[in-house]
Image (cartoon, rainbow, N blue to C red; front, side, top):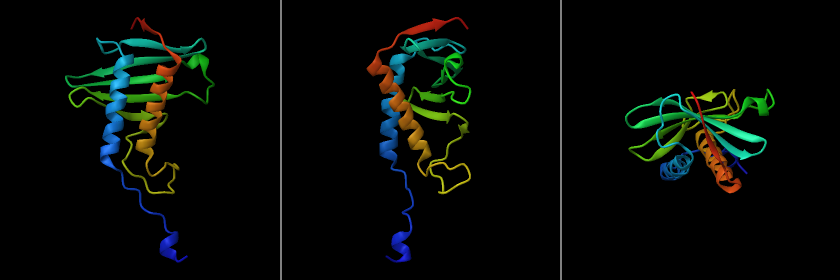
Length: 149
């Protein structure tokens, strides 16, 4: 094999697949969110007796809502605290992960290897992780509880 064959192909995002993923995430996430979506509003999603997530409306604008989804801290190890920040675009009917864990302002493509060891398609992978979490909620059953803000 020559040098060109050994070189990795550069990752090029396929926009229709990503948009489709964001549309499916929006549809599923809307199912678990309250209809009012008031800023500061919080709800619990109970996955099991020992696993609950808090969904908090961080920002509400005319066409968008930003929510934080996080595992309740009391139930998680200090080093493991899953958290998503998701923006729902109501006019486009799409949901996009803005941040996950400590990674914010995700780029469409990362060079690899990089200092943070993010995958070339990190943005897609994090949105797939949201999809998998939503599937978990749907599969295990859930119960939402409104918390007073």
